[in-house]
Length: 63
Image 1 (cartoon, helix red, strand yellow):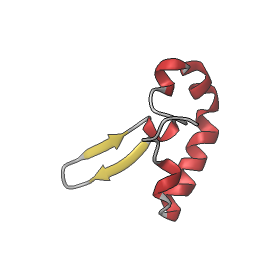
Image 2: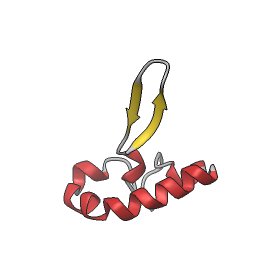
Image 3: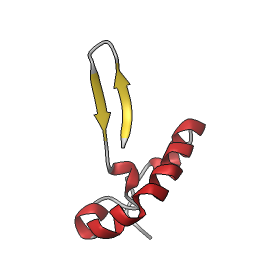
């Protein structure tokens, strides 16, 4: 997912972190993450546009 664009440096920042429900989920169950990626990306995009950093912060382990 594109998380940033720097026109001055001509760089694009990419990340899959915002698609994970918990850190390492891509390593544990890549197929599930990729299957749900469009829905997860929509939710992450909405949260980012709202400025809701907590919705995209996946630094804590699952409950």
